[in-house]
Image (cartoon, rainbow, N blue to C red; front, side, top):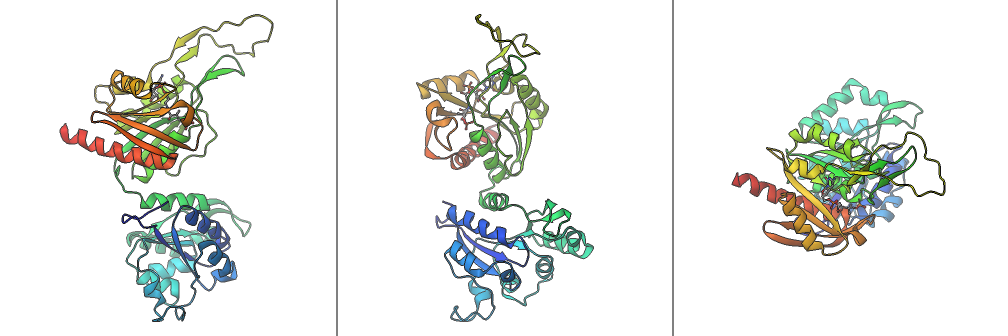
Length: 403
Ligand code: PMT
């Protein structure tokens, strides 16, 4: 559940203005509610022409407001009452007209007036035809909003409802949800550069076959998302996986361990924190065949040679980044995990059970560091990742105050 610092659910005021993308905000409402947000929807009059307020009312479980003079609020001050206590206002879709009003402090309908009377951050997700987006007055309004500290999410590029293609589409509900959820996370890694490896590596035997390790990439991708949410600049070196790129991460796709090493070496000198989540193949096949090896009744013998240990290489650099290793063990988790941590000279190692970690949507882990061990109970991988990021940030600061 998404909670504010005082442990109450996050309160989001969702403004919906007139645009075809208003239908996507119904799904957005559902995503926030599912994640435990308390959502209050306010619609412009134009928005109600695209989607009926009853849809948002059903999805948010709260009455929807559209009118400055709504008499359901006793003192008739909906514009003051509604934004009070909100942790943020998100306007999605935000029309060109709404951006104009917000940039110039207009207060002539409920949504614009309550934005003028707010004491919380405002995020807007513009949605409009590409020429309207590029219209110089609109771009001036967007620049003014940025100056005023309004967070502009998107727009995206692609097919538009009018049949044209270009910049102006509203971001998809899942992207908007991830960005707003990220906005609320403490910025414990602000200004830091984080490099991660995730997923398996794959070593070719022939044109179609290979050896690999089991790893879906979910844990590493969740960590990349959590690091971005925490304010870091994130590079994610990913082995073969079909997962979508986490919002905010720069992704480098690789196949073999050698590719992964090359990609890591390319950015490690500009890295503050290296988190090695990948299940790296420890061996590669000597002399892989260019052609598909024909099947016959004979025993096939493969010659394997050891791969470089990427994490050990990075931790052994003259000026290494702060290194976080992972260990997936099928037995003796603590003992083997601590052995790995010491052997690779890591300030932090995350130990997890092979049986319950690989491929799953949730995980439970033990953090091993110089202070001892710290268990994170079973939870979704994003929640586990956020806790690992917070712990890493704390240790990173400790290390830097010491040195
Ligand atoms: O992807 P999921 O399905 O979500 O599963 C996540 C996970 C279980 C794969 C992940 O949480 C995990 O535990 N990853 C490490 C797997 C492992 O046991 O690695 P290892 O013991 O082989 O290596 C120890 C550490 O050295 C790891 O940080 C690894 O990334 C690194 N290493 C290992 C070998 C190698 N050649 N280079 C490396 O960098």
